[in-house]
Length: 317
Image 1 (cartoon, helix red, strand yellow):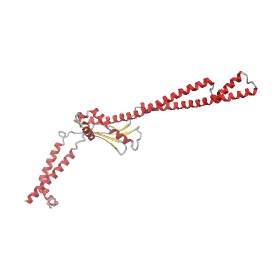
Image 2 (cartoon, one colour; image 1 turned 90 degrees about the vertical axis):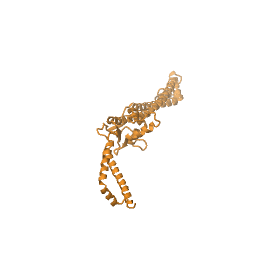
Image 3 (cartoon, helix red, strand yellow; image 1 turned 90 degrees about the horizontal axis):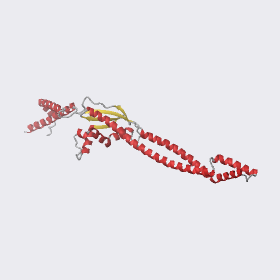
Image 4 (cartoon, one colour; image 1 turned 60 degrees about the vertical axis):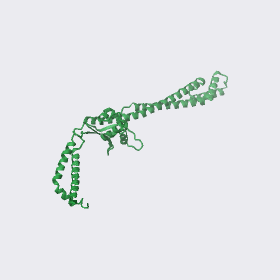
């Protein structure tokens, strides 16, 4: 057995059996050529698309293209593809099969894939028996991706719309309450503009005192106004300040609400198509020359082992 794999012995055997090796090689080429044909292996056509992420915000340490990949490879997109193209019939999997989902995912993942390129674009590849369907599947993945991201963003934007609505409602209630109190104090005390009124009333009050007309009706009115300012002035000033602050807050909240509502109502895309898919005019699978080459080499190598064993046994006898 020491000389079983002796190089010289192998070379001699190859030369001695060269006709046999040629015959084995020819048979392997013919058979592999036949069995790799469309009669036995149904050809598949490849369609590709390249897309670039847009209108996305970075989350944690993920890049925008990585976010895009996460969504494209999500189960939601896959289930939509199953339904849109009836892939259960295409792949020959029955929906009542207990392992339906496992089988579908396995076949789908072998025929459909997405990967990030060095230029931060995402390349989508689809293999299918029909070139048009492969191209349509590429388009649909992009469509479902845009729809999925749109749903995520709209859900977030609508949440912000509802929050701003609640804030506006609460602030409007506060505004109405302050307005009622402010109107009441103005009606009861005639305080309309504290800063201007307090200066005028004080001046009139002092003039009345110095002139000695304390019993006149005008002086009484000035005195009443002075007393009202002294008693209700601080409250009126505080209410006026709060009222102005609430008006400013309402204005700010209204602008913010409009921003969120505009974002929610936007209908935008989240992928720039760099390379559009198209139906292939040449099959991508199987690669016949590779099958023929591998089969031929395997057959010749197997024949070599058989001849080595036969030759070694003959020598042993």
